[in-house]
Every structure is written in structure tokens, then in C-alpha cells.
Length: 538
Image (tube, rainbow, N blue to C red):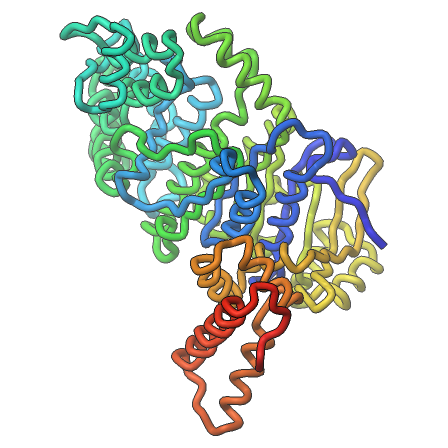
């Protein structure tokens, strides 16, 4: 029988989801289904704000489905980006809210965490003693330097041509000492909000400046005599590691160019920039996770109290934004969470998000491969657990012990929970509600169109993506849902490969790819004859 579930329900006090299982157990499909449910919830005025940090394209199908369902002039509201280590993806973590010379307390605490991560030795779990305190001071000094009464950056023509044109249009009078902040204010007051934000990117401090700021008297007086374990002074060690970070991560070293615009449902795919391997790769993954979380969720945690510290001419603008954001359901998803295992900074940030989530109506979801990938405090905070695959006996025992599963629930887990099947994916879920804990054995049954949108199996993704390029996403999903209503072509491909084998053929990668190409060609041929075709000739 149907079992109703609403993400972000008022039946729960907080919304912290843990989804775990071995690869191929339907985690991504369930997560996408929950995200879609949030978009289709009754009574919402606008699309919810959903931020997905992903390693791989598993959420691209959801974004495509939502995008194609939106009116043409609203399609910018759903976006999928594959992050790359190139200047076009530059993100300056020191950017502030529009018009603000200083960060909000939440932004400042993120920056201290982030810069501390950058100046932690690659193979170490923790920074040198004294570094976090010193980073706090350096962050404050950077903003003091960039503010109007410090040494703000001077406006230069030719950097943002669109801004140069508008300044002429509005009759802005500039001189040799005109700053980017003055340009930002003038554009904002003239009603050019987007262009004001562009100008402000050039007024914000940059990470590279920290290497010089750490040598100013304010920092030297307090930290100049401290020696790092390497034998150099703490300030020298900091300066050296900041310079290395600027060199290693070109996306951090210049003003922001990567713009999410007005998108509300965004997936950032870190596959290209979050490498797995040694210590250096783990560090890069941590930096990119932190950066992605900052870009996607920095507007989630604004409150009316923050407005009190903002320049008066910007207050009305921010009050309107904040009240809209406060009303909207918000959800942040950390996929492939096991990739953060070696990085305390990311995990501490996630725990902060979990603690603060209720106040800001933010749902937090972590998706990983094993219960061991989550810290004990994360398990303690979790209010919804989705176990998609029982795993080996020791994993069942560990799950039962951590979540206090009854004998019945343990039996159900062992006998019923084995990943996606013909009739759907059966899983065990435990919800902490206001009435108490509720443990259920549930089956996620999606229709063929959703299955085709959310499927992440490599063969299915390959077929789907080739067809997306040829006949467009909407038609692709309709055709595949009609011809393969189970949501997969794997069995069909296995049948074709078995036939080749019977005829004495060898099955290698080229043959497998050839079968996929042949299937795509058959679909396109039939589609050309009759777009409403129902079956393929075998």
C-alpha cells in the first residue's frame, strides 16, 4: 500500500538524512526521487533551493528532468555544472553579500575553516598550533585593508566592459582614486543589481593577499615569535603554504568568474577536480568540497539579524531576499561522502550545517557506501536513515547495534533489502518523528520516465546521453520509457551479447560498445520511421 513521505515534513523537528549502501544499490535514484518530491510538494510558492555536491553525473538526470519541465524563460533555475580547474570556474571565497564590506559571522567562520585547511600540511590531520587563531586575525585584516577606510582597490576601465558602458550611461563621474566599492554603490543605486555584484567581485580581498597581510605589524606583534614544528617562524610557514595553495588551485587565486546566477536547483559535479589517491589528492577533494558547499549554500544561512550590520542603502534589498529565502525549503546534499574521510575540515563544516539546519529550515543529506563513513555525531543528529542494501552479516549487526533495530527489522534487512529489483528498490528506513522512532520496510517504485532520468548505470547512461544529443531529453525519456519500461537496457544488452557468444564470438570492451552503438542506431532508425513506435525489432 502507498506510504506517504514528505521531505522536510513538520512531523520531524530537524531534517538530516543519511543514505548508505554499496555501489549500485539505488542510493542516487532514491536521493533524486526525494529531491523531485521536494520540487513537487504542495503549497510552495517557488521552486525550492536544492544544492547537490556530487562526484560524477548522477544528479544530471534530475536537473535535465526539471529543466525540461520548466517554461522556456525559467529554465535557468535548474543548472548542472561540471567543475574544472580553469579560470572560468574561479571562485573567490572572500566575496561578501552585495554591498557588504565585511562577511557575516557565518561566512567569517567558514573562511577561517577554509583558510586553515589550506595551511594545514598535506599529510597532517590538524594545523600547527596557533594557526586557527592567526587565520582569524588575518581574515579580519584582509577585510580591513579592502574596506573604504583602508586601502580599497581602485577601479580600472577595460576589466568589465559592460560596467564601463553603464557608468557612462548613468553619468558617473570618476577620477584616479575612484574605487570598485564606489562603482558598486553607484550601480546598485541606479538599479543595476547584477552589474553591481560584478563590480564588487573586484573590490573583495583575494587569497593571495594573505601572504603579505600576515607580515603586517598587527599579525607580527602577536605571532612573530612563534616557531612552527618545521623550525621556521609560524608566519613564514603560513605565507609559504598560502603561496602554494594559490599555485595549486588556480580557481582560488582571482576574482570570481563562475556565476550560478538565479539558479535555485544546482548540482556541482566535482569529478574532475576531486581526485582519489594519496594525501595531496585527499587535500584537493577537501578543498573542492568546501568550495562547492560555500558557493551552493552561502545564501541559505542569512537572517534578519545579519541585515543590521549591512550598509543602510542595501538593507531593504537584503531584507526582501532573506525573507524569501527563509520561506523556501532548502536542501543540501553531499554525495559520495566517503571521499571526505581524511578531511576533518569538511566534516566539521557538515556538522555545523547539521546543528544550524533547523533554525534556517535547511535539510542536510549525506550519501555514502557504509555506516562507517559517518562520524558518531552525524549518526546521533540524523533524523532519517535509509539503508538501501543489507551488506555482509557484520554490516547488518553494526547497523542493528547503532540504530537499535528490533529482531523483526533485522530479519527484514537480511531477507528483503538487496538493492533495485524489477518491482522497485526495497529499503529499510528509520525516521525520528515528534511521536518517536518509526522503522519501516519500504519499496521505492518510480515510473519509467523518472527511472530513465535518474538511472546512473553506465550502460543506461551511455544510451540515454547519446539519445539526449540526437533527439533531446524529453523525447529520449518518452521513447526509452515506452520501449524499456523497466528503466534499464542491461537485460536487453545481455541478451544480445549472449547471442554473439553462442555464435562463437569473443566478448571484449569493443564488442560491448558496439552493441550499445547498434542499440542507439536501432532506436534512432525506428524513431525516424515513426516517433510513436513501441517495440524494437530484435
